Image (cartoon, rainbow, N blue to C red; front, side, top):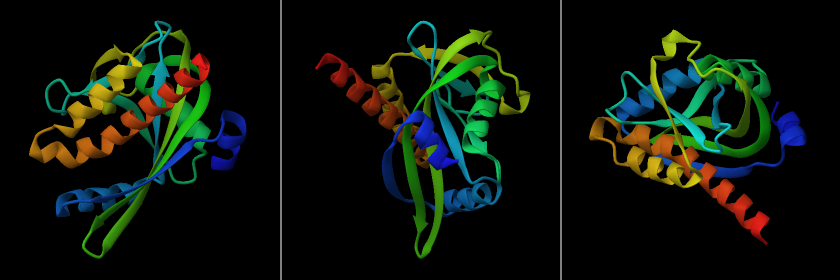
Length: 190
């Protein structure tokens, strides 16, 4: 579904990231890659003009991040985006653009595991904010500005040692979203 997403929602910025990780993190990505072909990352613009982030019960205290969810094997990219948005927010949305595609390679020694994150901007069009999938363990939501995405990336990169590799991974989509939003702002101002 990548070609269809590009045709409908624009050409994304593509990043290629090589991340040298520890043994536990490589094992984690090995398990994830067996269940998912990638993930959608959702930059959801609320009616306030701010962007929705969430936290989960098992995250380090005060850790917020963009919404995301796995793409099931054989699942269409846009269908996964719509499903995950509903599951994590209950909101009705309109897809605005395909912002980014991050190709990761998680490396340890000679082992390498690929993974992809597909970043989309969506706009709230209705509904009431509420987690629809209790297995997600979402315990709170916040709204941030475009500039706030960079601050969240910094916070994710500064997580405690047990979380630092996860935080570094999660921070990339926040930085990319902020960059694309900034580029859009620069284009509008010229």
